Image (tube, rainbow, N blue to C red; front, side, top):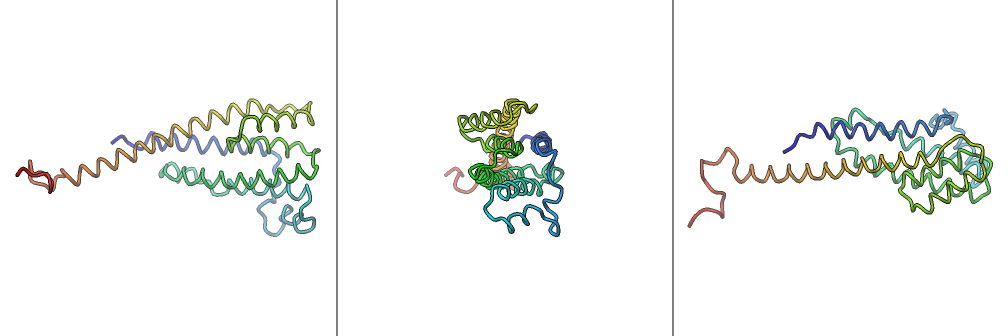
Length: 204
């Protein structure tokens, strides 16, 4: 069976890529998102439930919390944890998407980060390309002078997804090889006398 070591390094690269990309898109993230005593998004939700800004801040908080469980060192040692992390991350991003869509539907168009991060969330969720194109066009229409480049971000995210898919496919192959090796060891392991066939396969 091939060693898992190369895949552990690839898992670490994938996770760090996600983290770096997230931090890049949240340079102006509110630092009190997870402070239970000074939680501005939660206070807004309680004071002004259902408003556009409350939904937007709830989405920002949810996106911040989506990364709180990342442990790159542990994932390097146990690359199989990447699958669970990605599944949890996807579910949390779906919640983020809902908050952002509610904020946009309520008429919040003056907040560039809302439209920008909404488009990024769609990319991370591998939404329909036409839906992503519409989000990019809407952002560009409202913020024509922004120096951000969502098209470049989209290409980078797609490349990250390809690498993730390759890693997960190789991990699955490695598991299958390991399963077959264990099966052969049970059938022909060193505990058996030389040349002895396993039960049910002995010559008559």
